[in-house]
Length: 140
Length: 117
Ligand SMILES: Nc1ncnc2c1ncn2[C@@H]1O[C@H](COP(=O)(O)OP(=O)(O)OP(=O)(O)O)[C@@H](O)[C@H]1O
Ligand SMILES: [Mg+2]
Image (cartoon, rainbow over all chains, first blue to last red; front, side):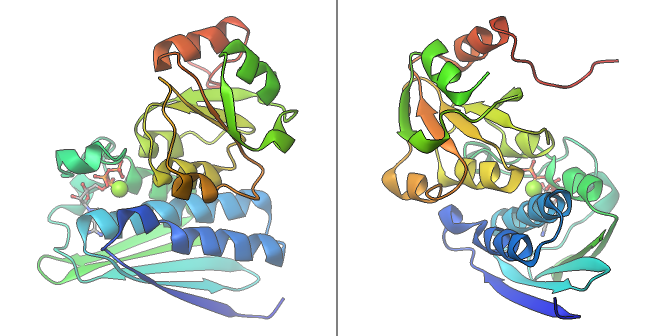
C-alpha cells in the first residue's frame, strides 16, 4: 500500500436517504486495501455517526480521510450551528434532535459516545455560529 | 441458528439474499433507533426493526450485520433494498410485531450476546 492515501467527500444535506454514502465508500476501500476487519468496522461506524450528524445537525459538510500504515484519521468539517456544550453532547442520551429525526431512527443521543468508544482519539473543535470540526483517529 | 431458521421461525418472506440463507447468526438486536444498534457491535448479528428506511441498510452495512428482519409486514422501497445488493446480507420481512418476533427467536436460544453483570 502507498504510504499515505487521502480520500475526500462532500456530504450533502439535501437528501437524508443518501447519508452514509461516504462512509460506505471508505469502508469498501479500506477492505480492498486489506485493513483488518475490526479496524474497518470501527472506522465505518465512527465515520457514519459523524456523517449522519453532519446531515441532521449541521447542513452537511466535508470529510477527509487520511490513511497511513500507522493510523486512519477522519476529519469531518461543517459550517453548521456549532455545539453549545460539548461535554453535555458527549453524554449518552443527550440529543437536541427534533421528532422528525427521531422518526428516521436517529436522535438517541448515542452518536458522539459511539464515536468516542470506537476510536482511539476524538477531538471536537466547535464554535457557535461558525461550525464544528470533529477529528477522529484509529491506530492500526 | 441460520438465516433459514429465522425465516421459518418467523413465517417470513425473503426479499434479498437467498444465497445467504445458510449464514450462521450468533446474536440478535431489536431496535428502531439506529445509534443504539451502532453501539452494539457483535459478530454475525441479526437486526430486527420496525423502522423502514435506507439508513437501516446502511447501519447493517457498517456493522457487518448478516440479516435484517423488517417486522409487521414492512417492506423497504426498492431503492433501499438495492443498497444491499451484492453484500453478505439477507433481508427478510415478517408479519409478527417486533416483540413477538424477538420472543420467537429468543425462545429458540438466540440471545443479545451481552453479559449483564
Ligand atoms: N456536527 C454537529 N453540529 C452541531 N451540533 C451537533 C453536531 N454533532 C452533534 N451535535 C449536537 O450534539 C448532540 C449529541 O450528538 P449525538 O450524535 O451524540 O446524538 P444525536 O445525533 O442527537 O442522536 P444519535 O446520534 O443517537 O442519532 C446532538 O443532538 C446535537 O445537539
Ligand atoms: Mg448523532
